[in-house]
Length: 473
Image (cartoon, rainbow, N blue to C red; front, side, top):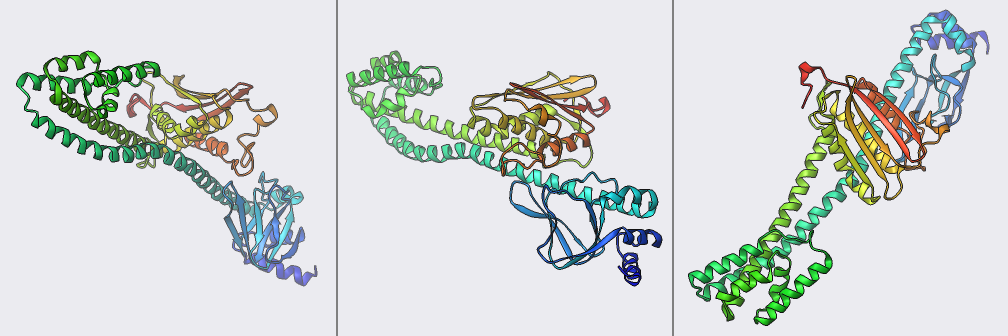
């Protein structure tokens, strides 16, 4: 490079937005140790998982950084004339986490990492400017990583929640359709009952058999054989007394007994008995259908409450006393469908009168979600995940234990590294445990892991909230 070219380049660096405030002598040092390159649109400054050995001072053009975190490649950052990227002083960057691609013809000054220590020693002001740039870049990456991981978690959560809501919603739709026909039958039965002109004693017997029908159903108590025998006994009784067989299903599905039927038959017979049993059966059927709708609606309300608690829509902007047990229960509620798909057992043990931790509810729920979700991924079909929460030495300690194959020793030390994942491509972002580590740290907590075949334990310790803030829920 000719001296006039060198002088022109120093002048351009003096007008550079990021490093222009450095002394001219230091800018001259930068020019003396760098190489000017030009990159055509579409060219790579850095490629994922390949070494990054240079600092790039962008002079003209436009470079964008793209990363693939499990949901396709998308843009994270971009640099234009006046920006600096690549290896920076004190940076631990070794391999590119994504792709830095020129969006148009770009000119930049490249300085190799071999000169970094010399620059730190001889160019203090320049180094300080570049360190500020590195911190700003790290902040943007942290925010982007957290956002991406939240979106991945949201996708899993949405799929699980849709599955969980579909069952009770379908039950309501199906049961409501049945209820419409049962109400028509109940209306016809009521008319027939009115036409029977029962005596007071017969009305009392009719009310008694209806009350017997409305008792709690016993599907969960009777075995299949016992239920079959009960249905046969009811069918035989109806046949002997000349009662329409259409009442069988409704009566057999209740706690009504042959003895109760005998009681009503002693005071009512003939067409009147048929009318009474039709009325009792149709009323019983409609009652149970409305109970099923109520149960399904309650299930939906419970799920909505759990998801609201999990996302913590009214999250405070400052740390506050947090009921860790409730957060764990809400998290497990929204992950229940995944556990059911693997026939997994998820056992929760929360210490009685567990003190509140100090932290951010939404962030801690994200921690529980990632750790429990990973545990469910690790176990085989029919596996087990145990969640314990208790107080230890002025800390609230949560342990999440799975009986999966364990984490290999050569991997254990890297699981909290950004972008490191043992999951197949497209199934893991490599951000989950890195995000967990950052969130736990932001909540003044500590996280550790122990693993061997058949038992992996993640331990999260959080500070207990001050007694003045409300130590106990």
